[in-house]
Structures are given as structure tokens and as C-alpha cells.
Amino acid sequence: MSAVRTRFAPSPTGYMHIGGMRTALFNWLWARHNGGQFILRIDDTDQQRNMDAAIGPILRAFRWLGLDWDEGVEVGGPHGPYFQSQRGDLYQAAAARLLEQGLAYRCYSTPEEIAADRAAAEAEKRQYVHVRRSLELTDAQLQQYHEENRPYVVRFLMPRDEAIVIDDLIRGRVEFDPKLISDPVIMRTDQTPLYNFATVIDDSHAEISHVIRAEEHLSNTPIQLRIHEALGHTPPLFAHVPYVAAPGTKEKLSKRKLDKYRNNPQFKRLFERGDEILPKIGLGDSAGLDPVMVEYYERMGYLPDAMVNGLARLGWSLDDKTEIMSRKTIVDNFSLDRVIKSPAGLDPDKLLSYQAHWMGELSDEEKMDACLPYLTAAKFIEDPDDDKTREFIGRLIAAVADRLKVFSDILDYEEFFVADDALQYDEKAFAKRITKPEDAVDLLTKFQPVLETVEPFDAANLETALKSFVEEQDTKIGRIIHALRIAVTGKPAGPGMFDCLELLGRERCVSRITLVLSRV
Ligand code: GLU
Image 1 (tube, rainbow, N blue to C red):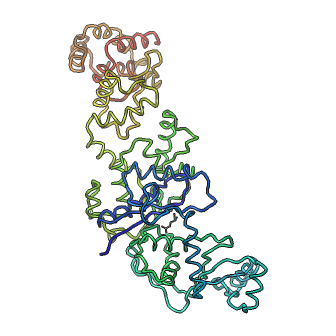
Image 2 (tube, helix red, strand yellow; image 1 turned 180 degrees about the horizontal axis):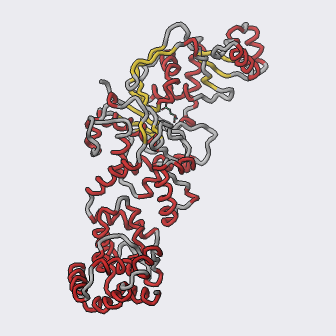
Image 3 (cartoon, rainbow, N blue to C red; image 1 turned 135 degrees about the vertical axis):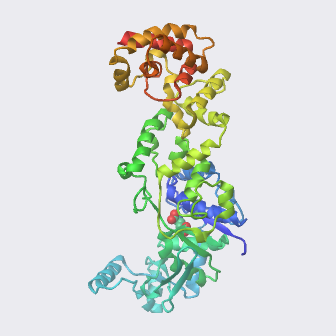
């Protein structure tokens, strides 16, 4: 195969959609698998303002996932500029060539004429196809229109004789009836190009070998193929990737960041978790992050390797069983013929299972480095470089163990950072475990002095101490352990009880028991 060159060409929307990211990943994988190049260009128009805000999150998503590009925005390359808005000359020159060769024409049809043509087609129950009225104009009329400066668009003269066949690398052979395709507008009245035209020029100019993109563009492909041919290009190969469905549905995961997914049972949990966590790190409502966007996962502390694993499995498989795959395994094995033809449903639970695996591959030190920014942003700690702080966080992470599913989960352990009198109690658990049982207060009262004497104050010694205390009191460990946990952490569940005591240290444990005893 000649050099593989793929591209991703997002519009500058201000965020990176998770489905778009999957398409981009497939392009990147195909390029990397073949030792080819991946190009990142921007399908913008002149009207767009504030380009940094519009493409920043897109580039950020690529960088976060480690998907590098060989040519394109910011990195440059021999086929630039990589912004459509800066390539006007190329499009105009190509349109002029087509006009000259009679492969395109100036169309003077007015919106009223077109509306009437459409209405007539509808009345006759046939598909509307653009009426080539302007091709009937005489030279004298054309000259007159020209002198009048009459507005026109440029339309490509779609050949209508031969069926158009696309050998799509994912969909297989797809045939289109050219008699049903309107001559597409390629240049607007203001001489700006339309997508179907600009894309053809860009793909050819950048020597793209494979156009891998969303299946919604399959219907544009016959037009693009014919334009390539008219311009004398060798067309690229096409591969149309099925859409990503919303969790648990067959419904396309909409492009817009929408609240409608709040009611989707699986997404709901992500939304709610985001509502809880993001404001704590200064990314509240105004940041507008939601689980349709790649940045949501970054900010919540998912791992790039888990995302790449999950996104690759959205419609592609290595075989019929392998779920966990490293980046290298995916690159080594990626092929377009194993992309499935039906939509793939995004599954947040599955994503979490990849996450759990890749999290398990990290050392506690690596986890700490990733958790510290969360703790700092949430003001749980002041100085992430302080040795004592790091030592403490290292121990906390070891105790939390695989309860830490994504890095922001570390913010669930506020009890290890708050002042004793600011500790929040789970009220239901407090009532059930401390207020209601007859013996809980008595046992806590009697165990408090034991805590004063345990030396050293570590999990193993604390466990021995509690066991002998329970024996002395002729009671069962279950009678005190829940009460004790709630007294010192405020919560009914969490890391191992003795780890919690050790982490908090003698002083805080004793003081928290005093506070609880004064509360009942
Ligand atoms: N800007 C287009 C889109 O985002 C690119 C389509 C293509 O890949 O040709 O849908």
C-alpha cells in the first residue's frame, strides 16, 4: 500500500464530542498501524470568531489522550494552511478550473424558483433534483447577468449517466443513483466554498489516502468522488464509521452537549457525579462539562489509556473476547475490516471496567501524583510539594486502594482533611449505629482511653487493642466497630477501619469521639 495518510477535520465547536473522538482515534490508529501520517485540520469558516476558545478543547482532548498528529494546526507541515478559512485561494482556483472546463456552472436560480421546483416535485411525489435552468441561458443572457452583477452560486455539474459506486472499506459496496442527486453548490455567492467542495480540495492537496469519518457523510461521498474525478485527482479510499449510540439505546449520541441525557440511566450517574465533583475543583456550571464531551473524562480523572481502550472498543474488536488492550496492542492490530457496521453503544460501566484495569497498573506514587492536583484544587491540602503532606496522601491512597476508580474519587475522603468540629456525619448511620444501640455510647466512652495508650498508633496494634477490649467487655466486635467508624469518619463505609484510625492519628480520633459523645 502507498503511504497511508489519514485526517480528522473537526469544525471548531468549542468542545470535543466523544463520538468524534472515536472517529479521530480510528484515523490515528490506521495511520499509526501502517506507519503513515495523521493530519489534524480545522473545517472553519470566515465567520468564526474566537478560534482559541473554539479549537482549544479539541486540541486539548488529542493531547490528553496522547494522539499526536504529524501535520496540521499548531505543528504545521507542507500542506498548510490547515484552517479552511485560510485556503480561499485554493478553492477559488479549483472552482475557476471547473467552470472553464464546463464541469461546473454559474447558477442564477432564485430562492423563489428553487422553492417552486421543490413544491412541484412534492406535488408529483418525486424526489426533488435541482433544475438546471441556468444551463439554458444564452450567451447574451449570461453576459447581461454578468453586467448586472446578478448574484450567482457555482454548482458542480453532477454527471447523471453512470451509477456511482463506492467501495467503502467498512460498509462494502454502496451504489448511488446519480439521477437523484442535485448539482451541489460548491461556491456561495460570496465566493466561499461549501463543505463538499473544500473537503475534496483539502483531501487531495494533503494527499489523504483514507477518509475515515462518520457515516452521516456517506451520502456526501458520491458528490465528493465525482468532484475528485472532475479535478483529475486519484480519489482517496473511504471508510464510514457507524455512529456511537447513547448508553443502552440505539439512538445516536447527539452532537450537542445536552441535558437530555440526564435521564439516561447510565449517563445519569456520570452527570450526578460531575455535579458533585466538578464544582469542588472550580469547574461548576459555567464550565458546562458533561459526559458527551471528552474533557469531562479528563477533568474527572479518567486515564487516557482507559479512554483509548474504551473508544477503540466502540465498534472495533481485536477478536471475539479481548477487552483489555494496551495502546500498542491496539495499534498493532487495528484494521478497518474489523469495524462493525452497526452502531456501537457507549457504555459508561464498561468504560469504568477499563479504567479499573488501567488504574491497577499504576504505582501508588503515580496515583498520588494524579490525585494531588484534585486535593489542591479542592483546597483539601495547601502545598502538594510538602513532604509530610505527600507522605500522608501516599498512605491514604494505599488505604483507599481500588476504591479509587477515577482520580477525582480522592475527593470523597474529605474526612481525612477537615477539622474535627467540621466533620459531617451521615445522619442515618449515626442514628442507627450510635444513638439507637443501647451500648454504643458506653463502648465508645470506654474505648476512648484505650486509644490514648496504644503505642505505636498503627493499624495492627489498634486491631489487637480493639480485640482485647471487646473480650474484656465480653461483647462482640460488631457492637463497637460501626459506631467507632462513624464517630471518627462520619461515614458508614470506607477504607479499612484500622487504617482509618491510623491515618487520622491518635489526637484526632480521641477528639472526634469526645465530640460525638457530647452530641448524643
Ligand atoms: N467537518 C466535518 C465534520 O465535522 C468533516 C467531515 C469529513 O471528515 O469529511 O463532520
